[in-house]
Image (cartoon, rainbow over all chains, first blue to last red; front, side, top):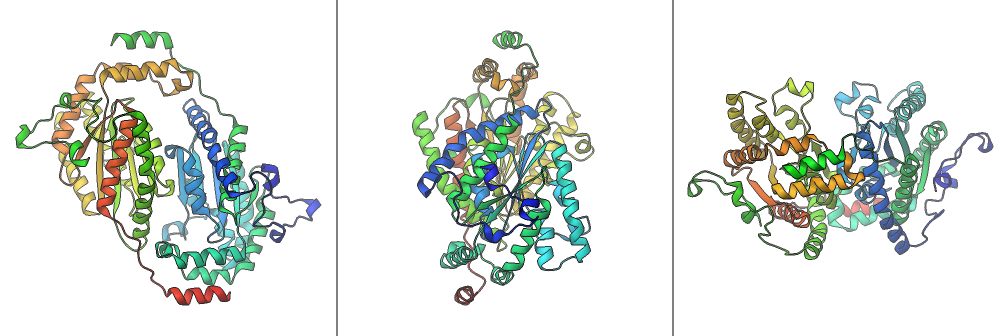
Length: 280
Length: 280
């Protein structure tokens, strides 16, 4: 799964990424219908929770490893739904979730990576970024919120930052939830149909659709410049929610299995403790 | 359920609380066996998640209300298990979980409520404290970590703090997970039996058992002094994990139902948005 969804860059592809070549409705591997997909995702809940507990347990004995899931995608692409359904499979006490909004005045006074660094998961944790430092080369690029040379410099700063995370034991899993233009329209229309979804609707989202192509190009630059060995990008087809949930769960499972965290051995005399417990 | 589990203080009871009168294995109401208890708790998942979403949605329109669950209890009483099983029923993105450990050097330089204030849930969130400011009148009292007059003053400071939270729209639900002395022994022995639970075992927990009675008395003082109208204490019998999970879920449900948060109405012209969406 990892290799299938991983963004391919490099000479063979002329160093370019064409998002149009990724079908947002694709089912590149795994279950092929909703019922099977939901069942498969539910089947991952046990293994994921087990691996998470082992990761946390290992941290109590000094293991510094942890995982950071970075979620990016257009409005309605399902970042929130992924947190609810995929991260909902984990023990919430070991999850550190941060939703990045427009920067506050305080955040604007710091370098763009400042607020991100503070949200990095601690050893043993699963961190989740709902949006991230990539907004500083996405909306910032589309809306020209910074001079071109500043934007240009940020790709390198991001790569250096993520490289340092990897060195500190953070497995960075970056997921672009790839939703189609027509599917987004359908989702926005469905929000308008349901009064209990109106709070999720912002008329500004309609304006943003006018910049769709500019956003696609900004994503392509991100995928070209920032999919590194230390922190590769994965493109998850997200037109089908059940597929998106299964695919992200599966990606996390594969990364956690590779980490293969272990319960630490007892650092005390088990039999002596047992005897003392029987006494008092 | 709330009234059944709520701590009764006041003149009729001589102002005293006797924890010994609360059976840690009791089943005061609700399901009476494990299977029924687990099914009943699972049945609360939908209503809890729905109420949480409404609470969050309301906050986007200025509703300042939120809920804070404070979990206290002896080692092995199930604070972690409650977070996993009960808070696991909610959307993790709306939960703010804080586990309070021994204060750091920085925290020690501040008043004891400083670190707690920073962890209060934002409007629309469900906050969870795994241990809390009550440690400053529990272990602090048992181990004499502060002079008696300082300890004495803290009850009033806590009440004033919680009163201010209530005024800001925070519904404070304080739960003592009440586990018995023999049940704790069994749980510690089971941790010793299982190598995958050794990481949770600390030989110091055996020492703490020697102070069991002193802790019970410290809890009784807390229940007497700090169960207020603004923030009452609930004692949940916790010898049975399935009962504990159901009872805490049920307590949260009753509080959320009382809040009765509402989806905010649209602040935009739905039909105009629909027309614009169809266009572009």
